[in-house]
Length: 458
Image (cartoon, rainbow, N blue to C red; front, side, top):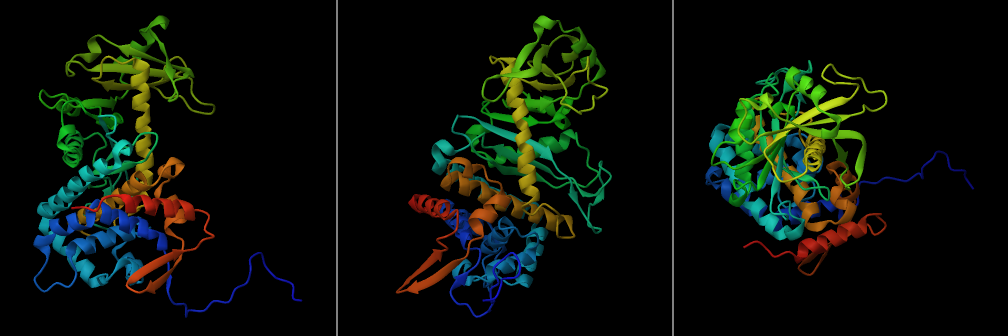
C-alpha cells in the first residue's frame, strides 16, 4: 500500500468529459433576465442598431457581456466563458462582433445610452412589482445614495488624469437605490468623469441625480417619496438649492463640511441640548450625542433646511482632526425632513455608509478598471456594468431569502454560480443536474423554484 504524499487527494485529469457544464449556477442569472423581461427589453431598445444581415441581436450581445461581467469578467473577451457553454447560454457572438457592437454604440452617443437606460428603467418598474414586499419601495419611499469612486488606469486612456488621491485614472459618480438592512442595492446612475473631476462638483451631482430619478417609477420622482443621500461632497449651496427647488419636492440628507462657524457653534451648544444617539436596533449608542444648530449659519441656504451635528468619543487609536472639538469627533449633515427625532434622522444618514458596500460590489463587477480606450466606449462599458449589477441585485431580491439576500457578488459567485452540472438531453427536454453534494445546492434549487413561479413577461 502506497502512502499518499501531499495534503490533497491526487486525481487523474482527462479532457474528454461530455455533458459537463461549468458555472452551471449561472442559470440563476439567465432565468432572472428572462423572467424580468430584461432580455426582450434590451433587444427592443437596441433594434435600431441591428443591421439587416446581422446574425446576432445587439441586445443579446450586450446582455451576454453583462452576464460575463456578473460572473466575474472584467473585459469584453471574457464573454468567451459563455461561448464555451452553448447548451446553457445559446449561440454567443465572437470577440470581433462584440467589439464592433461596442464601437457602434459608442458612435451612437447619447442616443444609444438613453436607449439602454430606458430599457433598464422599464424593467426596473416591473421587477419592483414582482418583488412585492421585498422591493426597495415597499415602504412607499425610495432612498438613493450618491457616491464617487476612483478607477485606476494602468495605461493612457481618454480622459484619464491624476486623482485627488495622487493616483491616475477616472473618477465616476454613481447612484444606488438602497434595499435597506434586509437587502443590498441596485445602480440607477453612472456618470463617467475624468480622474481630476472635483469631489464636490454640484453640476455633476445634479446630473447624477437626474439620471437616478429617470430610472425610478414616475411616482417617486417627486412628492417627497425619494430621499437623496450624499456625503459631504454633496454639501454645496448649488446642489442643495437644486434639491430644495420649488416644485421638485425631493427629500435630502446631505453631509456637510465642518466649517469654522459650525465648529464654534458646537462649542456653545449647552449640555441639555444634546440628545443621545441611537443604534439601528433602537438602543442608545454609548458615547455619542446629536444636536440641531440654528441661527446665522443657515443664512443663504434653502428655507426649511435643518443642520444636525453629532459628537462622539473617538474610537481607540483614532486621531482627532482639526475640526473636532473638546476631544470629540464632530460630523454634520443637512436635511429638510421634519416631524422626526433628530437622533432618528442622524441614524438614517449614517446608513448612507451602505453605499460603500455598493461601491465595493461595483469594483468587483467590472469597475476594477475601464478596459477600453475611448471615453465613449467606456460609457457603454459603464452601462454594461450597471446591467450586471442589476442582475446581481434583482436575482437575490426575487429568489433568495434570509442572509443569502445580503451576499455580495464575490460570495454569490463562489457559492451559487460556480458549481458544475451535468447536462442530460431526454426527448425534447434538456435537464441540468447540479452536483448534489454542493453545500449550497438547496439555496440554488429553492431560488430556481421561486424564479420559475414568477409569471412570464408579456
